[in-house]
Amino acid sequence: MSRTFWIFLFFTLVAAPALRAEPDVSDNALFVQEVRREARRALKRRDGLVLWIDRESGETETFGNPDLLQQPFLPGSLIKLLTAELALRSGREWHYRCTGRDRLGGRRRYCWTRKGHGEMDLAKALGQSCNLYFSWLGMQLGY
Image (tube, helix red, strand yellow):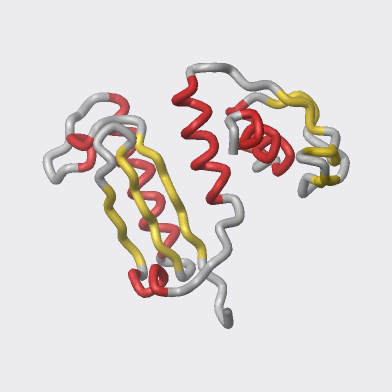
């Protein structure tokens, strides 16, 4: 692919009313509005697309460059968000120690930082985009 682009995928924390033209004014709805505003601002600086998925209803909304949906791309860290969603639905807490490398599924795997991240839970793993945590978590979830 000749050009670089970004796909931002956000799972909303509130139901569809927060995404309507006349949004709810609850704290969660205000938070979602602010995140959407910042995402739109960020798109002015780079070629990208934002895809919103409402966790409760499954409704989606996109803004940005829709032509990007027609181009092939490698999922990269996008799969981490989907794995996180499955982990949240399991209702369990998932803890893993990232050392920078591990043998998972019979293969040697590496994190993006060879020194590792140390003790991780889901929130920390998302914040650090820890490759090993999400590889391990996907296996724990049966994927």
